[in-house]
Length: 150
Image (cartoon, rainbow, N blue to C red; front, side, top):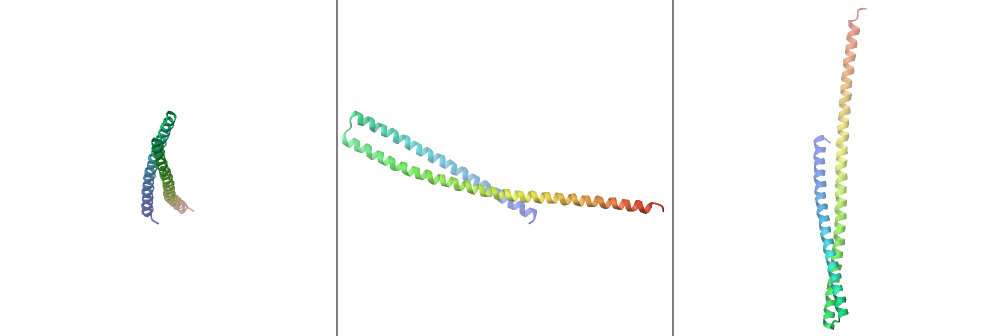
C-alpha cells in the first residue's frame, strides 16, 4: 500500500470518526431533551396528584373526582410513553457510542500503520546513510593503503 493510499484511508477514517462523533453528540442532546420532558411530566403528575389529594381532603364531588382520575390515567399513559422513548433514545446513544469507538479504533489502526511506515522509512534512510559513510571510509582507507609507498 502506498503512502498516499494510506493517507487517503486515514483521512476517510478520520471523516467517518468525526461524523460518528457528531451523530453521538446529537443523540446525547436528544437524550437530554427526552429526559427533561420525562422529568416535566413527572413533576406535572406529582403536582396534579397533590391537587387531587387536597381536593379530597376539602371534599370533592364524584364527577370532579372522576375527571381527576381520568386525567391522572392519561398522564400515566404519557409517562409510560416518555419512559419508552427515553429507553429507546438511551439505546441509540449506546449504539452511536459503539459506532464512534469502532471508527476511532479504525483511525488508530491507520495512524499506527502510518507511524510504523514512517519509522521504517527513517530506519531505511539511516541504514543507507550508514552504508554510504562506510563505503566512503572504506574507499578512503583503500586509497591511503594504495598511496602508501612499499
